[in-house]
Length: 415
Image (cartoon, rainbow, N blue to C red):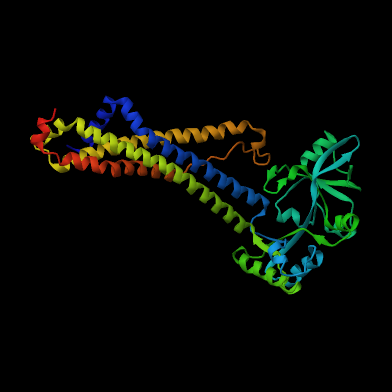
C-alpha cells in the first residue's frame, strides 16, 4: 500500500467515526491553537515594545541615582541627586559621549490654566537636547533653546492635547498659561505622540530645566540623565566611562545606575520570552493529553480492525506495511488536528486584534496603529503543524507495533 493510499484509508476511517475522531483531535486542536494565539500576541507585543523604544530614542544611555536600602545601611553617606555639575563633567571628560540631556520630572496631575480653561497635566523640566535625544518633534513654533536655559526663561512647550483643551481652535503660540506659581509663555506645540512607556507626552508641559531649578526648586538637582554615545558599537564602553566618572566624583558611592535602552529592551524581550515559554508549556500539556487520546483511540482501532489486519496479512501484507498504515493514520489524525488548531488559533488571534481596534486606549495617534499588534511568523505555523504530526507518530508507535505483531491466523478467527 502506497503512502497516498494510506492517507486515503486514514481519512476514510476518520469520516466513518466522526464524533470519535473529533474528540480524539480535540486535545491537539486546543494545544496547537493555544500556542498559535500565545505566539501571535507575544510576537506582536515584542514588536510594539521595540517600536516604543525606538520612539523614545534608540541607543541611549540612561543614568540616574537611586540608592538601594540594603546598600544605604552600609554607609551614612548619601546625596539628594545628581546635579548640573555632573552634566558638565560628562560633557567635558567623557569623550565617547556625543551629547547629554538631563531632566527633572515635576509630577503628574498638576493643574495648568489659561483664561477660563484648565486641565491636569504632567510637568517635565528638560534641556534643549531633549528634542533630539528623546525623538520628539515640534508641530508649531519651536522647542526650548539654550537661550531659554541661560536666562531661566518663563516659557514652555506643550503637548497637543494641552493645546486643544486650553485654547480650543485658537493659536496657542504666544499665549500665557499658569503652571503652579509660574506664568509661562507657550513657544511651541509638539506633534502628537500618544502614550508610551514614560507616560502620555501629549498631556505634558515642558519647561527649561534651569527655570525649574532657579524659580521653583532652588537647587541644581536633576532627576534622570540621557546620554548619547558617539558610536553605537561602543555603547558599553561609553557606559563604563560614565560609570567611572561618577565613581570618581562621588568616591564610589553606591546608588548610581547606568544602563542603556538596548539593555532594557533586551530585558523586556527576555521576560516576554519566559512568559511565552510558560504558556507554551501549558499548551504542551494539552498536546500531551491529545497524544494520549490518540494512542487510546488507535488501540481501540486495532482491536476493532483485528480481522481486517488478518486479511491483509493473509494476502501478503508485511509487518512494516501494517506498521506504516497505523502510523500514517495516527499522524493524519494529529496533523489534521494541528491544521485545524492553527486555523482556529490564527483566526482567534487576529480576531482579538481586530476587536481591540475599537478600544480608544489602544489607538496610537502618531502612527495610526489600532489595537493589539498581532504577528504570526510562518515558521511558527509550520513548526506547530510538524510538532502535532510528531505527537501523532510518537503516540501511535505502540498501537502500530501491536497491530503489526498480530498473528494472521488468530486475527482471522477474531470476531
